[in-house]
Image (tube, rainbow, N blue to C red; front, top):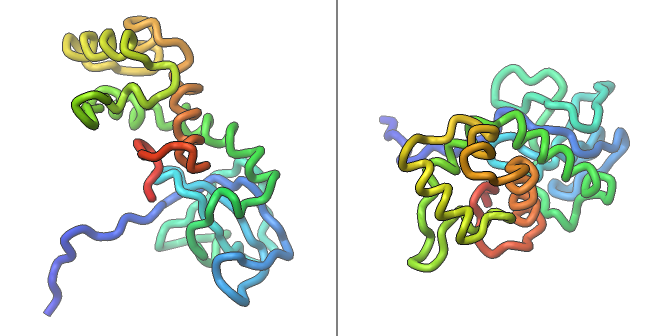
Length: 188
């Protein structure tokens, strides 16, 4: 007799390589070694430690499939890893990889901006994004009432909010590094 799970655990389908060590030792699973990859999940934006298939090659910034079925270069996702525990080169690559994710997942982030709500009576979720203060927030709320934003460009043209990709990426980095107390984008 099988019961439906109330909320099935969501797993990442894809991740972006931040760094890899072809003769590495896992820091999340004892005794595991081989090609150890540090990556960031595309959807939940969590830092992951991944075990690569022996003799596979990886490139920094490469999008790899880590879903349940049909992996070709990945043996297993070893687990989540804290920002402090990733290599300095992975930390360096994080900025540009996060910007790439925010740029390529435009629909997801624009939808977020279109639907963001107040978090408390005094703080709106939009205000937690760097560069959005009370003035931009007010304009954004007024504009999205008239018509939902269709793209970053639409947002820039109607609100005057410059470089949304850069600002959203900055917020994600603050969440990954633990600089922020509340997360909008990164799943814990």
